[in-house]
Structure formats: structure tokens, C-alpha cells
Amino acid sequence: MGLPLLVLVSGAPGSGKTTLAQELSKRLGVFHLNRDEIWAGLRFTVERGGDPSLARRGVVAEYGVLEHLLAVGVSVVADGTLYAGDFEAHVWRLRDLANVVNVHCRATDSIGRDSARQADLGWSDDDLAKRRERLETIRSQVTEPLDLGCPVIEVETDEGYVPPLNEVVDRILQ
Image 1 (cartoon, rainbow, N blue to C red):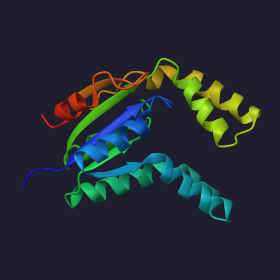
Image 2: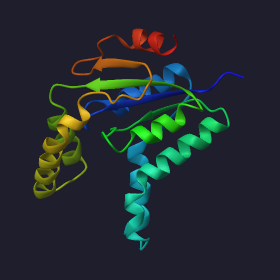
Image 3: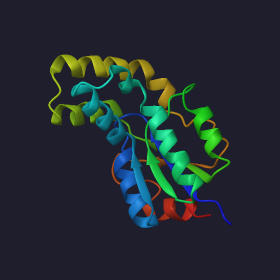
């Protein structure tokens, strides 16, 4: 039996990961796992009296879901920022369960794009400033793809996709 496909769409916050992952999911016809929605579900629970330590379990939740889906043969497109030192071990473990491809997004002003998205969600100026400062601090950790022992496809997301989406899909399927 062939292994399922795991397409990890990585990059800095604001680099276009979720939008690209949604497109790839549609074109490939496979499930899309959005890390932001996992974190939103954890925040929802904590805000309603859940254990505050839940908010730190997002990575464990995401990779647990991925491991379960891949183990039963479900191919997945998953998006999220992959931080150096935190994510490599999780992905290496998944490599035994799937054919993994890392599609790494780059955007010239990913921090500006992230700030605009958070402002649209109603974040305060104070919270936006703290987030920008944090993103500036971690920028070097997330702008280059991690060494995950799998193929990497670099995609520029400033205006459309370079290489074009059809070429990205073709390279994923190689």
C-alpha cells in the first residue's frame, strides 16, 4: 500500500500559507488542516473556563491529528509556521507515515500582511505592536525552510504564486 501524502505549507506569519494551502487542498482533492483553527478551538475552550495550559497544547494537538489521519491513510495539506527547534522532531516522526513535501511560502512584507490580518480581527494597537515585535524577533527562524529530510518547494506569494500554482501541484505529485 502506498503512503498518504502530507503537504506541509510553511513560512512566516503573513506569508500566505493558509491561502495557498486552501488552494492546494482543492486542487489535490485532499483534507486541509489549518493550525490557526486548532489554536482558535483551544482559545475558545480556555476563555470558557478551560484549563489555561490547554493554550500551549496546539502543537501536540496538530501533530496528534496529523499522525492519526496519516496512520489510517488520509492524505493531508497542513499549514502553519514551523519554528526551528520545535517542529523538526514532529515532522521526522510523520515521515514514516507519509510522503512529505514542504511547500515554503515567502512574502516580502509578511509582517505587514500579518499585522493587517490581525487588525481586521479587531486586535488592539498595543497587541499589534507586541506581535510585530515578537515576529521581528523570530523572523530569522521562519524565513528559511527547515531541514525536514523531505523535498522543499519554495513559493513566492507577493502577487499570485511564483512558480505558478499548476507547477507547484505538478512538483508535489512527482
